[in-house]
Length: 377
Image 1 (cartoon, one colour):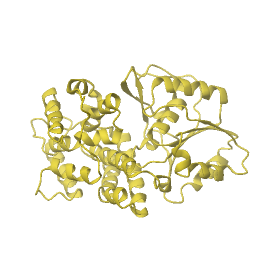
Image 2 (cartoon, helix red, strand yellow):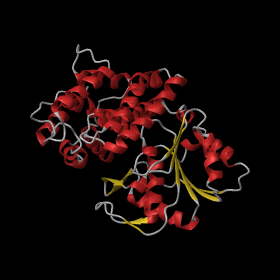
Image 3 (cartoon, one colour):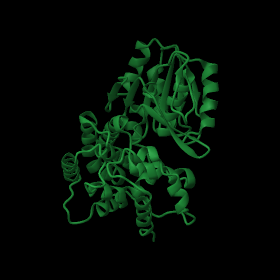
C-alpha cells in the first residue's frame, strides 16, 4: 500500500512551508471549508506558510457537507481550469474527502458503483490538513460520496494523500457538540478496527494507541476543554484513521449512514446512536455467530483486552457503559419524530457489515433499532 508522509503535534504546521518549498510548488488549489477555515486559524497558517514563496493559490469551497457526486463534478471543472502543481485539502471530513475525490477523478475514470478505475493522467500531489479531530480522512485511502442519497465509498491507493499534517490547535475552536461528534467517530473507528475481521498486527497497534488516547481524553476535551486533552484527541483520531485505513468499519458505521442521509444527523452522532447495542453484540458474540475469519480464542482475548482498555468493571452491561459514556458527551439518543424504521434498515451498508466480527442478519438489526427506540424520552 502507498506510504504517506506524516506530521503531528503542536509544531507540525511548520511542515507545510517545508513541503511547499521541497516540492517546488508554483500554483496550488486549496480545497477548504466555507467558514471553519477562518474560525480555526487555518487561513493565517496558510498565509504564513506561503509568505514569500511566490505561489499562486486558488480556493475552492463550493460544496456541501457529505459531498454529492454533483459537487465532485463541479470541483473537477474547477480543477481543470486552474491546473495546479499541488492540492491542499484543509478542513473537516467533507473538505478532505472533496480534495481526495477531486484529485482522484482528475486522473482516473470509472463509475463509483463499480469500483474499477482506469488511470488516464498523472496524479497531482495532495496534502491533507484536518481541522477537526475525528474523521481520519487525512490518513485513509477512501472517501465518501453520495449519489441519489446513496452513500458510496471510493477506495484506491491513490486516494491516500501524499502528506498529512495533524495540527491540534486547529481543533481548539470547535464547539463542544462538534468535538463530541468527531471525537466519538474516531473512538468508534478505533474500536471497530480492533474487533474487525480484517484486523492485523499493524491495525491493532494503531487501534490500541487510538483507544488509549481517546477513551480517557475525549470527555474532558468536550466538557472541560483543556488543551492537553484536545492534543491527545487529535493524535488519537489520526491513529484511528490509520487503523480503519487497513480494516474499514463495521456494523455501527453500516447503520449510521441512513440517519445522516435521511435525517441530517451529523455522522459521528449518527454512529453513536446504535454503537452501544452493536458493542454489546460484538463483545458478547457466541462462537456459533462469530465470523469464520476469526479464531474464537483469539477473539475472546482481544475483547478482554478491549474491555480492560475501557476500564470495564462488569458492574453494568457493555451497552450501558457506552450509553453512559455517550450521554456524558451530551450526544442525545433521541430520534426525529418522523423516523422511518424500514427506511433506515433498508439503507444499512452491507459492505461494512461484512467486516463485522459477529454475523448480522435482519432480525438482529431490527433488535438494535428497537433498543434505540426504547431510549426515547
